[in-house]
Image 1 (cartoon, rainbow, N blue to C red):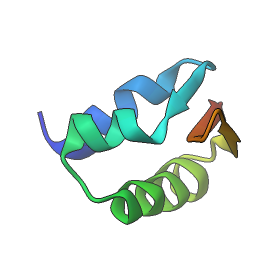
Image 2 (tube, rainbow, N blue to C red; image 1 turned 180 degrees about the horizontal axis):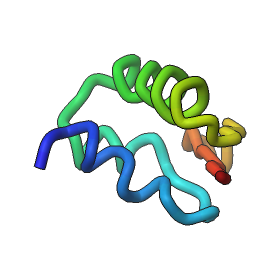
Image 3 (cartoon, helix red, strand yellow; image 1 turned 45 degrees about the horizontal axis):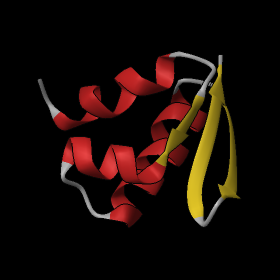
Image 4 (cartoon, helix red, strand yellow; image 1 turned 180 degrees about the vertical axis):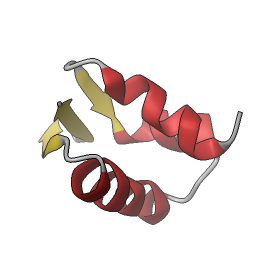
Length: 64
């Protein structure tokens, strides 16, 4: 399984997702994960992405 599929999988549900989870799953740098979320999930796939901080962690809420 390539890294982008490991990154997309957790985002399929409307739950929150921690940035650190994607970094761990893909072994990508934080800026690469953020770029993927912005370019692929938001722009290309048309998903609604909301980013916020919860308890000092970057969190994404992604909905279809």
